Length: 402
Image 1 (cartoon, rainbow, N blue to C red):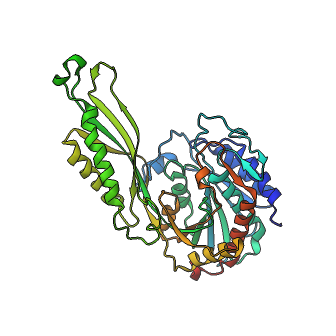
Image 2: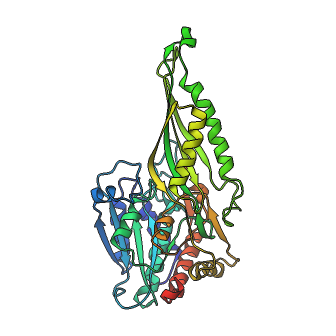
Image 3: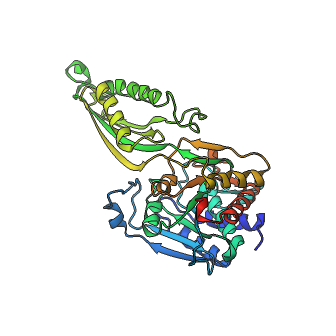
């Protein structure tokens, strides 16, 4: 097989055309399996034990309601067995909802126009998954390493799909995740924790406001304390790859609800947000520091609990041979010196590094279009990425490189 822009665009469009909002990914994985078979590859679709995963002591959390969890692995015929090193190309097929704004071509159209494939998930990250699929097909069973495409669900809400896939098979010497990180070799990622706080007040009639205590008024110093905490997190950044970012560890309150009646002093406010976790910092320390900051500002009127996905930070040393292989492959195929980089978001990378598997992210530009209306990926970028991935597969020749 030879890599072609037309083949990549066709298959990305086919996968984008299958809606796969987090919690409902099976149909997209089945379509990916069909595309793999057409390329002469061997897909295996499997259902995970969801109850067992939720009871696991290292369960990473989730935010979306689901009743089942599916995964897919793809390999070349005859690739198993022997003493060859094993390389994972890992990516997720779940996507965020389409939103309420009108799309140029429709969120599930998979339209091919203006040199791009359009639709939800095109850049984040069905395009990367298809590039990996085609790179695997080009390498075939003759490659010096055994390469497995690990396609997962549930990345957007905490990484349960990759957590489950690694419970099933973690015998990898390295992993590359083709997230849309702009042809950098990303070797560090911040962690992320979601939290909910409840501020208690005392209700009263608005005409007798002084007899009540507004939960909104009690929240205001908490909000200021969260801003101060963000400043503390971003002073004296230790990890060299995170220093290059404008804001490595954001703290954001994304949702507020308070009050039930305009002429009543509100007796309850709920705020929900996201906390950045420093590279190398434990989740326990990150939680404790935020809880202490909120308690000091809230005067005992605030309850905090941790919700949804819980992303630890991760990093792979830039002098690791696999990191150097990815960087050099990027440089060779893009025609410019690739750089090592860090990103401020939580990803599935941390689930591989937690098991001692070196992991690097490398993918197309376009992260700013992820989760946005009119999401799209450039077809020429997909072709470059597929060549990068094929070069990495071809260059991964021994476990000593991992």
